[in-house]
Amino acid sequence: MSPRKKERGKNFKYLMLTILSVIVLGAAVWLVIVKFEGGAPLIELKMEDPYIGAEEQISALVRDEKSGIRRLRVAVIQNGKETVLMEQAYEKGKAAQGEGKKSFTININTRRLGLSDGRVDLRATARDDSWRNWFSGNRGYIEKELVVDTVSPEIEVLTRQHNVSQGGAGLIIYRVSEKCQKQGVSANGNFFPGYSGYFDDPDVYIAFFGLAHNQKTDAEMQVKAVDRAGNTGRSGFYYHLKNKNFDAETLRISDGLLSRILPGFENVDGFPKGASRLKQFLFVNKDLRQKNNKALLASEEKGDARMHWSGAFMRLPNSARQAGFADHRTYVYKGEVIDKEVHLGIDLASVRQAPVPAANTGRVAFVGRVGIYGNVVIVDHGFGLFSVYAHLSRSSVNEGQMVEKSDLLGYTGSTGLAVGDHLHYGMFIHDIFVNPVEWWDAAWIKNNVTAKLEHVKSRLNNR
Image 1 (tube, rainbow, N blue to C red):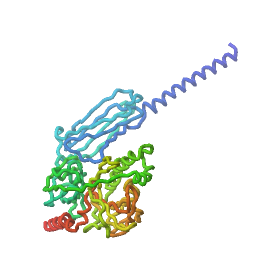
Image 2 (image 1 turned 180 degrees about the vertical axis):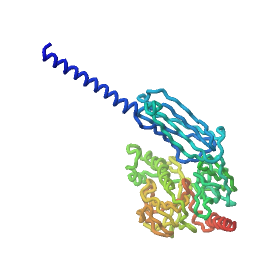
Image 3 (image 1 turned 45 degrees about the vertical axis):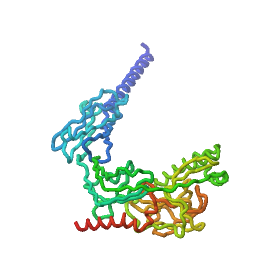
Image 4 (image 1 turned 90 degrees about the vertical axis):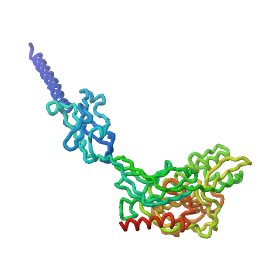
């Protein structure tokens, strides 16, 4: 064999050895990086509060994107006794097919498991499909301390009488036996949360509540409290709901009126630009009205948990009433009834551009334009009570600003769906518009609010 052929054979052997070495080294690296990876599975429990009631479902997630999940075990421990809630084994080698992430639900029935009220430890363990730890895999572990609570909160109503008219308001004061995640007055599907802090006792709550203008007087009311474990306590209380008759009026709509008011709404979302004037008016008067009412009530979501106001609320000075609360309006166009709506405020007229004072002390919750109500200011008086000032020509306050009773908020005007210069004044409790006339009445304030607060305060101080 010639020296050249020998050299070629030698080089070929070196090449093959190099390729083989690379393959072996690559396989070794793959084994170390992939099959011997050292990342432990991650276990997540999706729960914000450690308190659990008689039955609880906890959403959970275990993930290991590299090797995949091999085994999962969940147990609870109380007084040294362990009870397995779930134990699951998964087929090996499925990480690439989605076995690297598992969602599961932990079901805890405390009575069936024999768990008593008090502390219980929840432990979850997961093993992945790694070859680490003598092929037993990496171990993920989480332990969370839970509190079993199967006792419903107790409620003691501290006020005696609660007389409420349709469209009117009431106040109830009560004590709850424990800190709750939700408590307040339930009234036929409406809920009015209570607030603590007015009295020294943190377990005593105040709740203002309202009866909608169209709510029946056979409405069922109760105080309701839901604790952190989800247990619900309820208490009835004495109340008397009174019927109230509201005025009715007919408003005649002319083409001239439509020509004046509709152009101001052409840029509103959803405005039917190509439709007839009648359809455009119905959109503004019905659809937009409903949307705007919700926008006003949305201020309650960030209401202050303290009571800012005191005494009777102030009415626009030297003003005459143009429309009342819950007036039932019938709209007539060319002799035909085209719509029926309810007026959820009181219209007050004085001189043009009359100064508008704050009806009582509070924080300015909103300043801006709201559809049919034009320029609006909303004042948060605390504990879920708000006042609304609409159709303003301009405002003179900023959101977040504290105002005292009679401080200037702005000036009357005819913005929005207003025919002439006036103030639309409204009040609401959480998400129910209520009759402002009650809040202007010093005697009503004394009988329904002040006297109750003083009576309960005296009662608590004498204990």
